[in-house]
Image 1 (cartoon, helix red, strand yellow):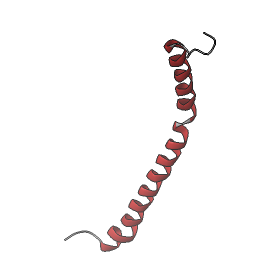
Image 2 (cartoon, helix red, strand yellow):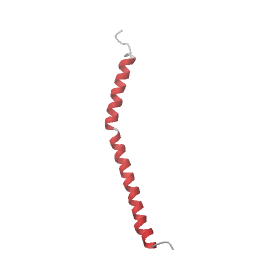
Image 3 (tube, rainbow, N blue to C red):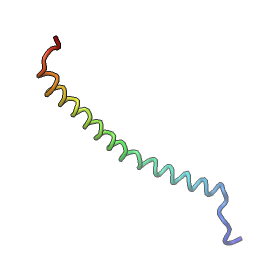
Image 4 (cartoon, rainbow, N blue to C red):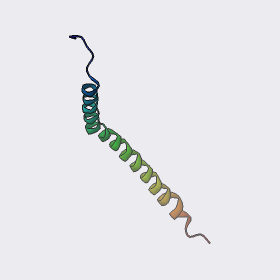
Length: 60
């Protein structure tokens, strides 16, 4: 038939190609967001360390 649906093999291959294309470009943004969040957490930890823990001195 001229207007028949694509075979499941062709549809799966097209879906696979789209998934591979998304995987190549998708995680970069997620890695950037995760890196920024990690940097913020580390910066807050250092701020607490230098401005709260060190000024209090050694526990007695």
